[in-house]
View (cartoon, rainbow, N blue to C red):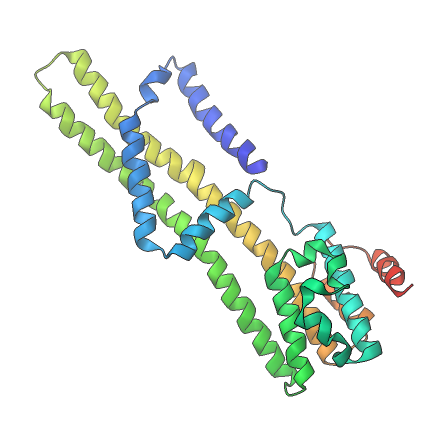
Length: 285
């Protein structure tokens, strides 16, 4: 919602200011300029990125229209599922978790936490790491390295999408100049015509430069930044899982491991210790 509000403010301010100067809105409607800029931007993105990144651009852009999934509710669910899994392992041993981590979709524990189950990478990170611990062959420092490699690769892959959007945004002013130069070429071909006709062609050419700069700094750049913020929020969520797993692997009690994870949450999203106790007490009951 804030993405839409922000873009509306950007466009409304620019166009509103233009019209306050008695500018004609019809002059800005130049389909040929939109075609040049849109086609050049889309084509350059297709050339520079593999299909997975192109698909990610669409999915992450649409994802910005939804609320941030990594809020206080998501963290509350995460801490609860971590506590319940660790408590289960403490009572029944890691072998007691085998059915849950092998088929999390059918686990009666995981099914109670739809927000957590909706994050497939978080589920994989938790379950795959517990499978590694189940083998009993990984030392603590090696486990930390495995988790860091996993998170680093996931973060790198996710950041390819905002990087692709940023690259197109950086190219927009250049494409705007291309559109303007093409317009000047057309204008030069009509140099002997009426002054009004030449003026219209020059105005149409300048619209290309205007659109390129506006799209670069008013649309693509803020969208890429919003994507980066959403990815950073997911990375923080995953770091929570990492912290809890490392604490559990070194033998900390379930409540201690979850408390370490709680301290990893941003203060404005973090439940208090009392709230965490109440949540875990309900699970213990």
